[in-house]
Image (cartoon, rainbow, N blue to C red; front, side):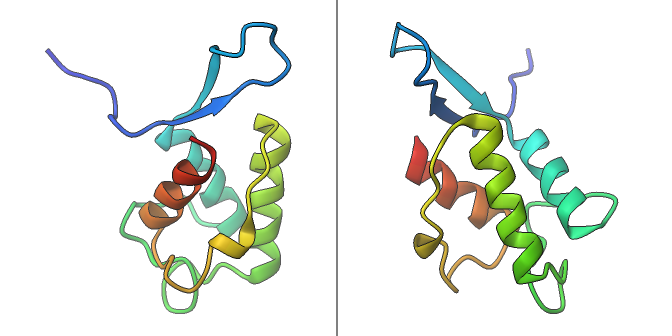
Length: 100
């Protein structure tokens, strides 16, 4: 028996009357969206975001965050996405910790 990726991001969906309902940002969709902004074919969890890795520009990074905020109706505090976030997996985890 196989199980889905155990680390989706659960996002409260504030517009529903039942506040217990949640939207899930699945890791594959997160990585695919990040790849689009990094202008690469795919992103792996261990990929470095800036510099020698994906070479994601700061503008593209902010656009990526804004896209997530708009699509999932959440607020992401970019001040908490500091220099300790180096890889795609760390970014996913940090965002999950913020909004989960």
